[in-house]
Length: 372
Image 1: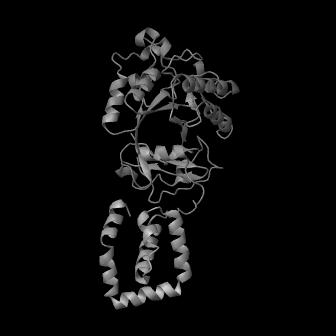
Image 2 (image 1 turned 90 degrees about the horizontal axis):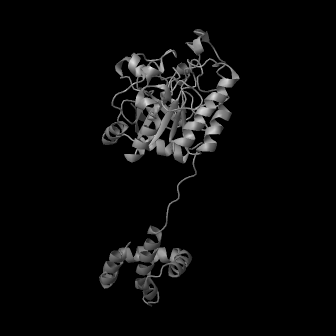
Image 3 (image 1 turned 90 degrees about the vertical axis):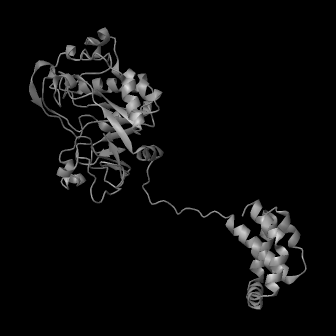
């Protein structure tokens, strides 16, 4: 009860007393409770007198009339009870991290995929594309960010490097980047433009860096892992806070590979040394959320139709899943159901230490969020 409520009770105290005197049945009931639970009532009154500073309660507890005291005790007990806080039950582990909950509450995020295959009209570049192919005439990252903001989306994720290996920032570790393109005479940096625009319009910024690189001659060798980690260092130290990091599950296959033009396979379970690769990133930005088809923070829903399963379980085994694991669609059990009826949006789920928080569908819901 607030001050107004107490004021009303105070002003009408004599009326309440009259009502109790005139209501024999209520009086008998009150008296019975008083005598049967006298100890409890007295203890409660003492606790109330100690903990509630309201002058009304202190003053009226000293009245000699029994009915007045009973009325007051019930009133003060009610006030005391209303002030108590019911504690939430202990959580059933595992529970989501604070960052996972922030991601889950965002609901709608977007990808910007703008690179050499924008100009070659290929979904996946082969890796042999000339840097001169990337020659946009009017890039406006601010327009991207404003459009997403106006549409109610919360994060912009940029494909900084896709499977073709072309880098949208002037990486020091490869010549296959925007620095050797005609864009702004080699002085452009799409990652900087996009990250700055995201911050300007109040969007979170995410980066996608494909582990598979069809351009690199050393892909499949240990030296490539050093190269890949050096690129991660560039992205996570030069472009401000990164909310989400994407690692793609496509790993190995045919490619240019520095001119070899061959098919290469890697051991997906060990080649990237994911535990240490992720640790490297977390040491630079501890709050980053990791996505891959198997997490560890955000995972793929199992299809690219935007469909979450009929039952999207919140727990998942983390000891047998890793980025690029073959056959993961069947493991995630979300591939076949009604897939022909859905659009072409990506789907994903969040989990930490075995907990899945969210998956993507055409709209948020069904334990899901959306990436377009």
